[in-house]
Image (cartoon, rainbow, N blue to C red; front, side, top):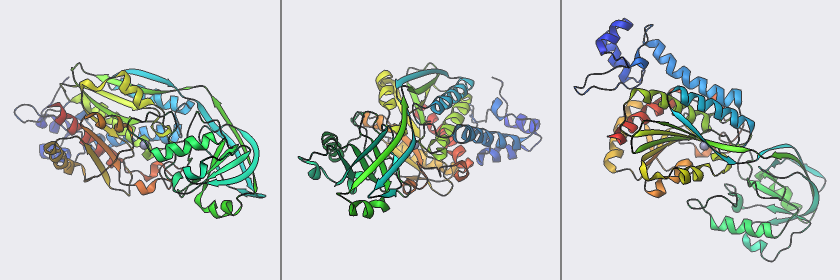
Length: 446
Ligand SMILES: [Zn+2]
């Protein structure tokens, strides 16, 4: 690769060498590797004859192109769907272009979608959303409210419709077949087990979010089910014992989901960078997680300019938001013995939220170095963030970092809803996360 000194770059671009240095400081250009004597060594990526404005434009343009592709052109892309596959093809292509060898790891996952739903309680229509993977039905039954395992003990709900309400539905239920090594909720698990055993003809579950989200997402549950807004609770409870009718039209076909694994370098050890590319059903998933993929791909491109001792492994997970076992499968096939560190990016770039970084098992000294370096890329708040693909690394003692936005309160307002669109994102925040992640890769590589 041809390289250039600061003075050469300045001459080629027609600016003062100090301007070049300033632009690096401002993060307008990707971080510039240093030679042993401390001098900056510019590679091709930094050389744009038309001037630095082009460089600024290019990074942002790349992020914007990724966001548009995933959240506008492709749109919602739940695991198993055709759109999910189109997204996978785009990402694999970008990884290859950036010089990574890509392996696809497939797993079975149905392509499911709801076509229509009609819920009538005591003659009144109640707005409802179909729970992911629910079968079709046209059924009637008496409404029986249940809110705890206690309510389900020795109950036979044959021919009846269970109305699941109360705290038990907060945050929804995990599918019964999900790998429970790291996530579990015994109370919810027990509840679901008893609910299924009581054999209701259908389930109506209350969602606690502003925009109702599916409370159940279990592809092996053969009981038709819907979720309703919390505001419907008085009406529904007021009609317990009355007849309800539920009509769902949904289709499901056998399909697959996939992880994309891109690898570069021959190091014995590796550093893993990951993000999920699927979306929750019904959302364009711009922040969650087109933004994470954009940062991952930008990082992958910029890493071409850095010689690392460790191999770099990129993993784009295809089913994080649908509980599909991509993460568990990856760990199974790629045992983490050679893993130095893992960095996950999920839900970044939201304009009106602080950036957040979560650290797991990272030495204190490294955390303070990262915090110091982060100042160059805008502030990051250190905070807890457990629920994403990195949940499969830190419990194994692997130093792990995860980037997100501080916006848990946006779940069911923006996140996982139709409102998660590109216009809510700040492109520079996405670029900065990629920039900081690159510096962190270098630290882990020392
Ligand atoms: Zn996510």
